[in-house]
Length: 409
Image 1: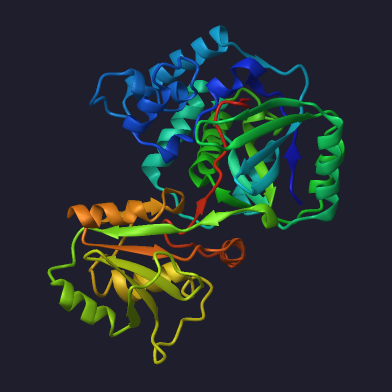
Image 2: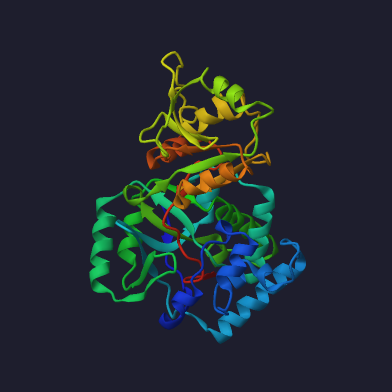
């Protein structure tokens, strides 16, 4: 069963919400975060990326950075201000991006269920990133950004969410600078939703594996140092937003490679054609599974499996992103591990194909690949099988915002 627990959110007033709301810490680098927060003292990026308020070159995992996070958080709480709710609540969070709409339930999920794999994973985490967010949680004594979870849609939950929307007035309703419409409601009577989620057998992490892992690690440390432990402390739960699987939108996570592994363009293309059918003047984005688009020397090629190339049947091996890695990136371009190889970069589908063409046209990259999106069904199957998806397999849009609802522990 899935435990979803109301919490006393720490949040800004409605008039400050749009200024406080910030993109997730891990979708921007320091320079991008500094630019986004420039001129806005209330941006939550001052808390989630506190190095933006320190001199250039400051190591992002230094003691100074975490001390700055604490100072910025305290300042935001006092001066913005951020205030805690009087009673524990659940919330509804609606995101609208162009014609796409999704509505999730905001609450706290169980660290025990994460540890026991009731909350299922599909991605490996990096120790350095876990260390960072664990320390961030511990110094703030708060989880300031939600984990993005999904579940197989339930009619009862859909009905309860629809009813709650009609009974409650939004706390926040604004359009961010990127055009995404954010609306949040407080649920007046959360118990019916809490009960409905107990009928959901499994939850799945869509995005936020490092946040979830860090919540587990911070719980372990706080538990070890607590005077007494009863299992109901706030640090036993982590903030999440739960969306039904049939509302989610996954965009492709595309690849750019800096060189051709010592080959000329002609030699490289010949090697590719040993595995793929490569048609000249192909589409900039594939239109179906089992197809890829490749940009080389100012020209798009449409790639498809050769008729004599058998597609693997494994739940992970059959993914388009896996096939590209195992049949092209590794054996032809020599990229063994996309997590560590500096010759490969990744571009979220939201940025468009121009972001693939630019580096190739400028000569800073040699080839780019546009992929067909991994589906939510793929993600659920991989997680149910206890397998791990290849790195950079999914790019979820639209993105949630940090700082609107924080969970103090």
